[in-house]
Image (cartoon, rainbow, N blue to C red; front, side, top):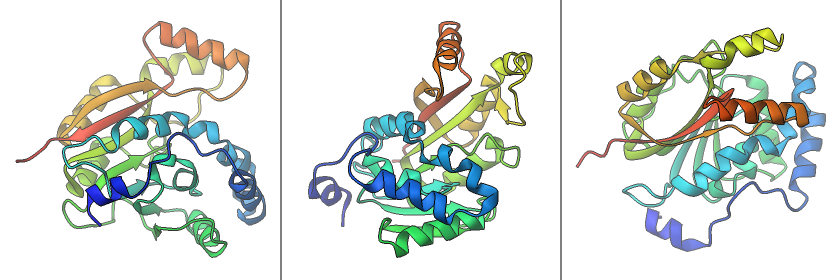
Length: 251
């Protein structure tokens, strides 16, 4: 099916899909099927608000590239498949979801066996060792993974860009090094990887990616957290922010 046929096949869903029985079934699957060491994270994974900024950016940019609708999408560090299930813009696409944590891969296969997840190829691998043909994907997603010390965008983005079509789309979110001092002061800083603006710009340039849009990631939590993040935004910074980028078009 061509990109034009994908776009015309049915009206696209948008936003985060919170309706129906699926969110409850997903939360129950997390409680029943994740291994004990990951069970404490089940409420976090079931919190669909963490997908709001991602879904909004996909709605705005996924199908606006020079080749039209994105057909084949790579989700890097997919975790327990919430992105695949609940981002409306991703429904009906051809997706490859990769993670190095075997438990998440097994959970994805469980969702497939329960017929909750379809149209997704699940790959268990280290993304730095994975190989696809040049220009294989129309879009690549890096959601909630660049906070880990094990991954560095200076190495990861140029590698992934090889597998991206000319003019293809990349979503990523990163933590801002400019506010590390604040979280340390509050005793809330963990071993997150944070990036300076220079590091981020250099990595994007090396990968041949240009920034389309940047948004502060919407915080999860209570009123105090909401107020703190608003104050940060007033100062022109954010604890974490999301970027939509596009690979240079080769004609």
